[in-house]
Image (cartoon, rainbow, N blue to C red; front, side):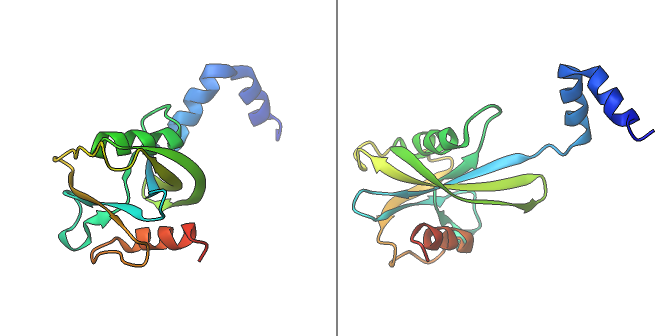
Length: 153
């Protein structure tokens, strides 16, 4: 009797197994954040239009599309929101426990500087580079923590 579930599982195979897994498990969003630095060490912060008024500053952030690599999500979100490009580096943190969401953060380095800055005004009010020890008021506490993690603190 203990082998019955395993026997049934092996008999249904392939795409039917995946459909059952999909039906049985939570569907969730992947929120991806990039701790984006300029080559001189300053960090890129965006003032997000849709975030709470007292916490509008933060790193580039967005949701992964189905089938998209998480590293590619940061590059895409940065390009869409600012017109800038970056080389995505090491994974900093993976956090779960949110309702139907997982948060993933990467380091990234700007390529080409701010010359191509074009803000997506529906989402972003402002983009600026800040020295890591001179962040503006209103930076999300979680993003301050990501910066400390990226700095090895």
